Length: 318
Image (cartoon, rainbow, N blue to C red; front, side, top):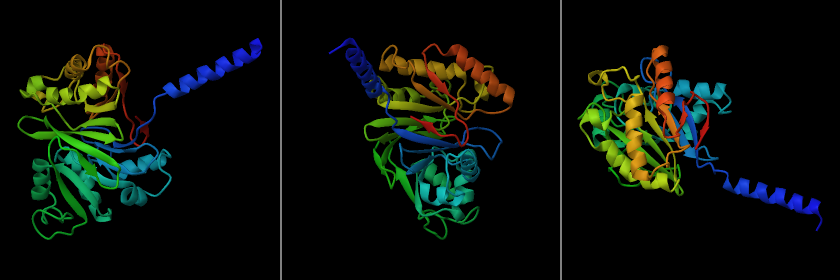
């Protein structure tokens, strides 16, 4: 074998190793809404599906129709708005019942197809009693007050119990969060094959909320981080560091986010969050506050995190 052949084989070998070590995509994510605050066309809602499928579950549903339209405008979807709503979205995981997380679900329900809405007991009771109650809105579900249209199946999630997501080939475990304690929000640990994504609804820091909910959650997911099975965390940062604790209203700042992620790193091992994907959700306007949040996160990122700011309608891969 001459030197040219040896060189050629080395190139092939190196390329093969690099290809085999390339991180495999586990999840396809399409943000339908990424903001907190007053922009009703861009409120918390994230479609997540196993990679290379259109079997999406919607994580919260503050904005739905406008987000689908934005995704079509950006060529993320090449079918109609109605087809995405009725066929691509297989169900909804609702973290809590605040309007900026459920208004898209409510408003779009007449045009939607039959599917399952998943939530914890407290969240489901709030939606049944205050929204889908046959008074403020028709009851499109199969439980709660009034006449049941039965378009939606309302499925209550047991905390920390793995539940199969119908027609989506994924499972979910729900964990409690504090959002102005004692009001509950929820974190959802989504599993596809042997890989995971973690989505947190609105949450305050344990320090302010006088809670251990985040530490308990970090304890559960730390082994997944260490094993590189957790592909990313969706977590909110609503205010810059200047926001006083008494006006956080169950939300995070860059300072509190980094404190919480340091707890996670301590549990998962030093260096475990290097290049780990943190998807920042629920940024609240005005624009100067959002710019300040981004500056502060960049300055305080001493864990080597890969911080991602999702764009409405633009596909992400995890």
